[in-house]
Image (cartoon, rainbow, N blue to C red):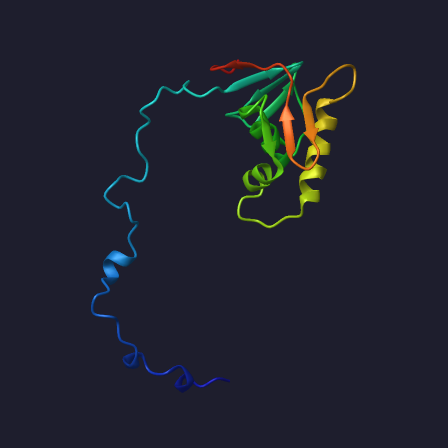
Length: 153
């Protein structure tokens, strides 16, 4: 059993005189409300993205083929969303990993595994479908035709 003497007595600890303890625990933006009213219309960002026989309902975090949900993990779906947001552009592997695994260290092989699952779900490369192109050593690009709608049906 440890003795409390090893840690010292409470009166031995002194607060710095310039430190305002009451202010230190407040949020830096405490004057603003935690939840603010939206100023842009609800449909300002696209909520439905269609490509091939697929529809991505962003607000529901759901991928449909026709009217049937496509079984896809959240990481693969997040990769798809990132690629669709920048369709036609190269998205680096580093950008994808930073978005999908924010503040978590993972091996690049994790991106490869989830990209493979995404391509399998989209049947990418089969029956003339080509949605995602890999630029070796650089990243990925969504090359399929995309239709964007502000409303989910």
